[in-house]
Each structure stands twice: as C-alpha cells, then as structure tokens.
Image (cartoon, rainbow, N blue to C red; front, side, top):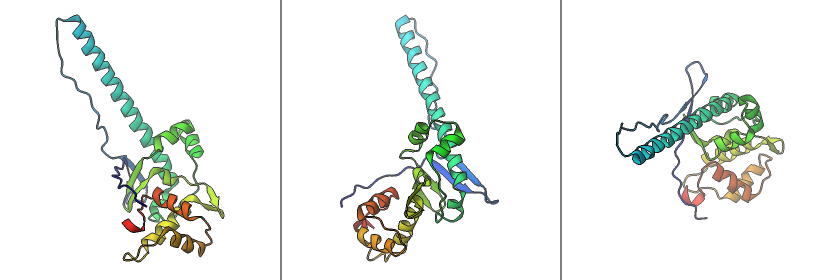
Length: 200
C-alpha cells in the first residue's frame, strides 16, 4: 500500500502531575487574537465597511475561543475517565463511549463527535488520536481500545529489520484469542497512525 505521509499537529497535551493527577492543557492556546488598529475616515461607506469587518473578525475570535473552551472541557472529561491509560503508558483502556462524555459535559453527542474528530493529543509516551480514548465492547468482550493496544504492542516488539505484515499481525492476535480480519488490522493500524510494514 502506498500511504501518503501525514503531518500531525496535536492540539491537546495530557500529562500526570507528581501526585499522579491528570493535567490537560491546550497546545498553542489563544493563537487567534484580533487587535485591529484604530482608523478614521470621512467616507461614511468606508467607515461602515471597516466597522463590519471588525465585527466579523471579533465574531470569528469569539467562536475560536468557544471552540478552545469546548475542546479543553471535553478533553478533561475523557482524560480523567481514562486515567488508567496514562498511568500504564497506554497499556490499559477503560470502556468509554461518546454518550457518557455527552452526559458528563451536558453537550449534545454530535458536539462530542465534532469536537474530537481528527483531533490529536500528545502525552509523555506519544501522539494519539483523541478518539482512541473512546472504547466500546466489540470483539470477544474486548474493547476496541484493548485491541488497538494489542496491535500497538505487537508492532512495538517486532523485529525492526523485518516489520510484520498486517496478515502476520492477524496471526499474532489469534494467539491472544483476538480474531479479526487483515482489513480490520489495517484500519486499526491507520487509526494508531502507524505506517505499513514497508514504511516502518
């Protein structure tokens, strides 16, 4: 497979404090600030245009800051419910659905989906999709997150001079009593932002 390289920019940083508490912050917070120079003109039409553009820019700034506040709030809830993930370096993941986060934040589930879609977080042991922290029961009573972690661990422990194909990953998963198709492995591998065997 020829997969294009992706340039990932995480928006959220999640860490553990010295007291083992979850700490969540935005990366590059408040990057959009509008500070237009004061202008005066005797042209009434130009004055209306300048006022209109200033209003639009301020409206955009407010929307941007609301987006930041929403992302931070939702990320806080997700991270705290998945504290085990950060305390075990990504090895353990609790069951967590978008509906649970919606109930906790009082946001609509569509807001949860939209806010977390294609967003990445950075932590001490890597960069991951925020949606990776959602996990529902799926295969053999294992959460999707558990399967993702198994795939990640298999790839991390592979012989770096002979990376495993997706089919070989399927075979290794079967020894853990996880029976999924090669196509599903490829989909989960991409979800983990791990390139195929030819690019590893």
